[in-house]
Image (tube, rainbow, N blue to C red; front, side, top):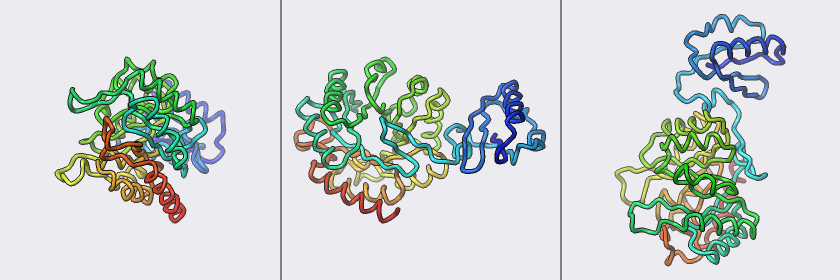
Length: 333
């Protein structure tokens, strides 16, 4: 349920209303719109008399929301959420490009790529330390040593870093990581999501490869319900019957999610297609469709990469792509 208040409501009446709602076991989330304050009521509102609240002088309207996700719902929060990452903003018209290798392989490799993507126009550095792989025999990442190398690259370049967490037990290792990524395979790891909800770090939440948009929003709801509003959604392609690409990039998810939720959404064209030559086209399409950012894999030697080399761009190709992305953003502004 949401309660839309009139402009400049009487503060005493507002406090009385909020105290009464809390006494009924309701949690209140306030959202300041352009001209109005909105109270989002979370909890069992079946016993709340809508007409009683509507009759109050300070109330403009009251609406029940049937959607199972409340906190991430745009009806609760009409304005776009802007997530702040060490001064970098994403969402609400702020656009960021995250780039780097799929996997951290060595100090030389991550530092070289970090410097190259910064020069090419990236604003955040990605790099996998813990790598979920389909095969137990594939390279699983350098783990905690990988995080140390990623943070070293951060010191050298100044780029905030993004890396994926696999398990609750690893959380302490992410103390100096700027954005914690939840991968597609962990999108419905609810215990992990609840724990991340108790932190205040930005969370990059990837859509599962066989999950609906509503299921993605419900996973984000787990994090927000824990008290962490700093969530960035990520569309990274879904599994369909098509085999020409690794996954099918759901570009339509951008406008659909923006209509349903206030959270920013970025696109991962690298994992979506699995083919480097398709990444630039899909990046431009996502930008034109209104994405709040991109996460692109870049490697200095894709042919010898230990993970996902075929989908990784060379640094010079990435730099050329960033220039085109800037032109698209200028055209749709």
